[in-house]
Length: 247
Ligand SMILES: [Zn+2]
Image (cartoon, rainbow, N blue to C red; front, side):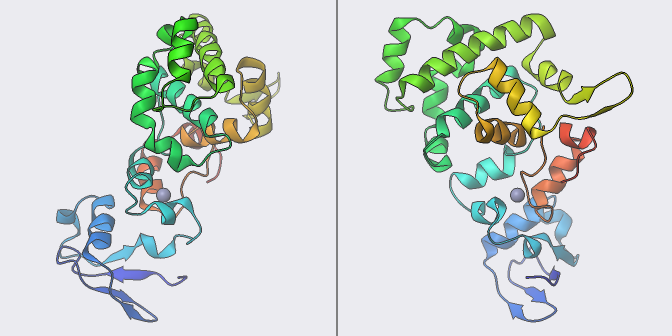
């Protein structure tokens, strides 16, 4: 896979030329590459470096291609900066609910989660009482785990406090991106984020916090640098890039 591949006639959808060998890839794969690069129109009549050729086969990027659930998440959500507090709270809840389960299980239940948790409005979830707890624990559309349900409600209340003090969950994350002393500042490291999250939220261990921060653009590593989505995210100047961290 090491040699850059060249795609020709992307719009016609058939020819992929490599310097070492020729192989044909399906029209879908070509269309996907073309779309990710800015649309088939833009690719027509051009010869392009094929970004998919460089992606590590073991990466999430390679795994997600054309997958009915991983594909859309990979292409439009994973690693993209998030400013909306509902979506941040949602991502935190989903990552937390994944513990012990596959990410695919969670992605399949994403709509169910949104419905059951009132579109992750922290003010509504923070006010959940016994009736709502019982409802969630009986809903097959979500993960029926008492600790996870309780943590979501607790964390919603924490986000309300954060909003009160910092304006928004997103602003709170931004405010904690750097470790500062009188002399200089440096980007907060993952272990320091985990410490902060453990102090602030429930059910936020190293893996959950790390994945939350990667998936929302606060830590690098969501996409293989050769992935076309990596390029798209870079154009949005995600928080990890603003902080000067390397992919
Ligand atoms: Zn990717």
